[in-house]
Image (cartoon, rainbow, N blue to C red; front, side, top):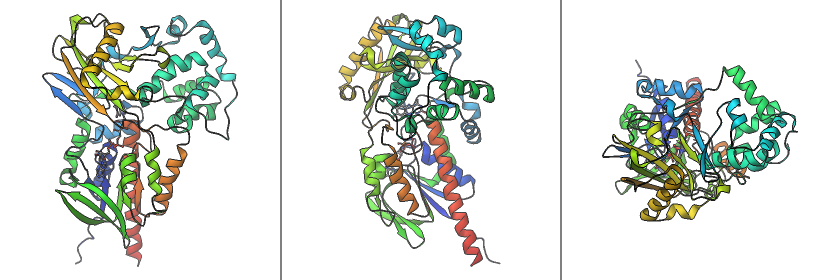
Length: 467
Ligand SMILES: Cc1cc2nc3c(=O)[nH]c(=O)nc-3n(C[C@H](O)[C@H](O)[C@H](O)COP(=O)(O)OP(=O)(O)OC[C@H]3O[C@@H](n4cnc5c(N)ncnc54)[C@H](O)[C@@H]3O)c2cc1C
């Protein structure tokens, strides 16, 4: 009796959330993934530091349970019981206007009475459904799109701070098609953002998308996936070269100061843009085609956690946090009221605020030294939330290349990736430079990549069986 053919080996490059999700799906499908991670830990941009009762999420702070696939994945990964939804007390979101925190209206009634927008702007919104669609033949910036549909005040006091919070980016430079495809689709499909949003709300049974994390922070997700994958995850294995080897792929990697190589039936690339560009991809499409990815802008961001005694902050911190519009000309992009959002972020009697500095708006600020950053953030918190005494705890983390900016002209990067893939049967590329920057986008990217690799090796096996 012949023994069954061994399950095809698939290389997964990068143990960020995209790569781990891909490997997890591949393993579940009965395939044999090997994850190569250059660092000593998994999770990529997801990571936390815990000290003396404080928890600082260094990168992403929460995950949006928007698509059903995210919730299903979390459940299937075994984390259903660990999921920690954002506290009800964190529903309120604030925007800085005129140097004060103003609550973002969360209902039509609150919209009518809010001081965040003028009457002129509110009345102008009524005309939105009748405004003509945008140009078909050219890409539009987020700023132009919002100006055209909603007007200046909504750009300045709603969209600009939101873009600062999500991308640490500038709406005048981001492409609405590539950076906010759902917003773009609302206009294309419904002719209006308001009409489209209402229709979607009616068909989907109301707004969904609760925000969550885990008791020990988001890191629980990559760590759980890595534990399930076991020895398939190889830390401190940096991939250098990917080349053809007959019908297979050869991966050359460095580990323990030595070069090694192994052969795989398929390769899933879940690397950041600069790592993709640095990869030596041989016999995989036009030479140097991925070099262009170096041009994707990734501004630096510093995440600054300041901890205070509760009694030293005047503001009730009754919300998610605040975002700062660019027109307010302040040094912060925004702050999260981290200890309101999730329990276990600060010791008893204390509060934790996580502030973001830098981005496309103020890249040089992210590089200031720790003492300066602490002072800048504390001074702002003193003015905006009434921090009346110095922080009792500080932790700072800098991201020299935080988030890829899906700027005008981004199509050329996606085209370069597609051209390499088209010339490289069995090689699939995803991650936040291609499939969107949110964790939900990356989880979906990992699922997509696993599906492509699985379909490829299964088709090859089926073909081999017929010969
Ligand atoms: C400050 C900050 C705040 C954010 N906040 C949020 C948020 O609140 N919500 C949200 O949804 N998203 C947020 N994001 C975005 C989100 O965290 C990222 O887009 C996402 O985590 C990217 O995942 P990834 O797996 O695609 O890439 P990465 O996390 O970058 O992982 C790639 C991995 O590849 C490894 N690698 C690189 N080169 C090699 C090589 N040659 N060989 C082997 N391995 C290699 C890296 O070490 C890394 O582990 C935030 C990001 C940042 C930086």
